[in-house]
Image (cartoon, rainbow, N blue to C red; front, side):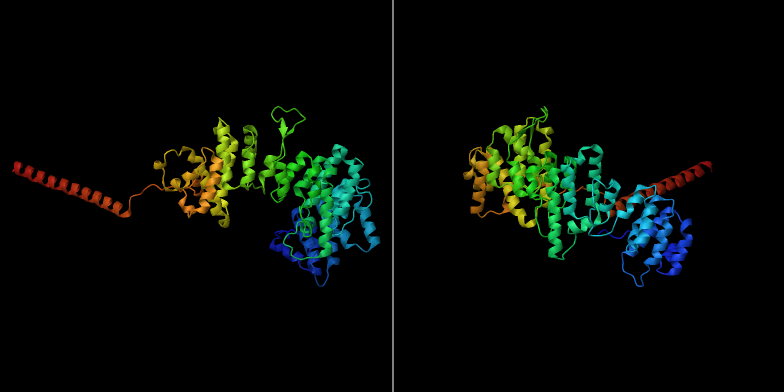
Length: 499
């Protein structure tokens, strides 16, 4: 549940909120003269107090305030009034029916529909959810309490089957309804398992079934509505994981893209399967996108390739090899050496590599990973990165006598000019040797790991400044004294001439 709003009630109004008859009477006397903003703050604060148990129970006093608010010319103030009075009057059918008759005549649809906005975890759809109820009524039901997901999914499924959402206006209403449903606090606290460690088998099982029903309805809804559910529905519950699994092969391209770009959805096997699929020709004959595939989206999160799988890419024809490598340029989970391989190979394939954004993507990912790699995994990653860099540079190792110590050790394992096979051989040689990470030279891009510090301009030391000031002062004093001595001598000479 969301935290209670801070309404910033001024000190001079706090007296109105004391749970006493006198305070409420004062509030009623002052209510009409208060600004709309202040009225809303006070009503919202009282609504919060109603949700907390108090002794003695003064709900009958709060009722007077909300009845007073119902007379307001402001629609939102009346809306707050109705939202509270319906629950306060619950149980007294006569009074409630008379009040609802007045509400139904209100000019504001927000006020009229407020009576359906019930603060409950167990709301029912009611009869004819899509056929007999207005859109405002439906919105009111889903924005406050928790509307059972299984029943909601059933109503959505029937409406879709009856082609209720084919009209543009009804489709817009559906998007608004789903968005409201997935935003309210009851659904967030129920479905999203926020900071909840309490286990209740019946409730947890029910929540899992509700979520699964909502996921299963996605392919049956219009694409936009399904896309919204894919973006926002929780993927798991306390008693179920990967609740989206049944519909993975039934999603539209746009829905599938939304699912793959969620970093909280692992789906590692499915992502791997998608990555190895062939391109699919586009039906729209788009000259800029003649094919479609999901290689980039599938590899964006929770995607790893071992040496054997990476070698599979390198065995492809050059054009397809380039496409696969470019699609991996923004992947967040590759091994460090694989980013270096992508940079070097795409540079080789693209003659105008200076402007190739895939190369820039791979460089940026490598930079981020160098700064984020966990300590327990870091050394292994850096060893492979440096060995791949050496394997790439080993193509220029020709004369054994010109090599340095670590190159001399690895030189016998060099496999011609084949960087990949040389890299694999270097890994074996390194494991069999007594070398450590510190023995290997840092790779070219590894320098990014340390941020360059700005070197401040050198400033004269304090002692040097003091000496300089002293010298200037001494020189100035000496010059003044010399001028004074010359003036005295000149005066004496002039006197002697005169006399």
